[in-house]
Length: 246
Length: 209
Image (cartoon, chains in turn cyan, blue):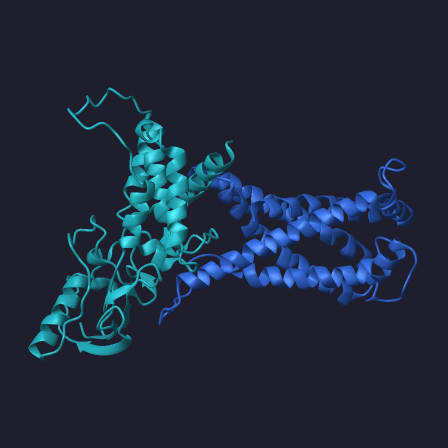
């Protein structure tokens, strides 16, 4: 495959970025999107140019490290992570525009790499449970109804990649927040801190500069893990109960 | 956003019910219009109940617009660098039209007040009787056209508005619930839009004289 890539290049956090065009040839349809970028970087290095910086880690779609906006879609045209996107989703001769996540709370560090520490600070604000650690308790010591366990597990699939923020026209992180709040709120261990969690996390979310949710649903369509929009409603319900006591 | 929006929906249902009085004839409608002013009398002074409703609506409008402005500004602040490529959205077009659609509705509400409340705009001739004003206005096809267009905008705003209100109130907690909410939003929207459009079209086609 022969492709024309248009990639956001930015030397550093404060540098001014620009779109740069690269032509690449001999890309296999079976290679992943990141392997295609690896090929481009080898080409750039052999030409004595600076390679394109991008994030990746597990490359099997479970860690949430990778993520770029491909032709205006977070993680590209398929419902998966960028590392699990394959070049067979494109055609020979395609033009591909590659940009970093765009959100002010996710500042660009270099090229396609953004700083997602804002998510870590939201988790630090309340996305955890406080338990006595010690010997592991028996699995059946705290019974959990299957319905709640399933919903908690569904929400826990969130890998915190930030595609929801990248796709949201409001730049809101509500889907991420809703996933974490639903994940912990469905389980007995999450109950003692349920109220303080939602209040602290939303406060941190707004403080980071993320936008507000207007229920458009772009986040859930971009989510590689298919987290449903209703986790946002669960967060809103928790917020109302915590704030007004009903 | 949700609370003020639901207040508007309750008002719209009452307003729609009142409008349907015209189907019972001019006297019934004039009686209804008069009764709105003397509602609750003699304990409540003339136009008292009307003003309670008006103040409620103004408060709801201020809350609704203020919330929209806050969301709008936060959205602008959250993405100061735009994407080079923005693809067409996956969602329905009307969910992206809440802001300018809302502004269009506000413009219509001002026109509507100028038309029937302040009577600074007349379609047809000026009349002392409310029923005569309504019937004369909607005997003109373009009078019906303006209101029908506004009802289409209202319908699109309501479809996403009811969905959003349910989301905000924390009612959408499962995929089954989502279906119920979607169905409710379609039923309520259809009820309001059709209910408001029945009188103008009935007048246009000469069913109410």
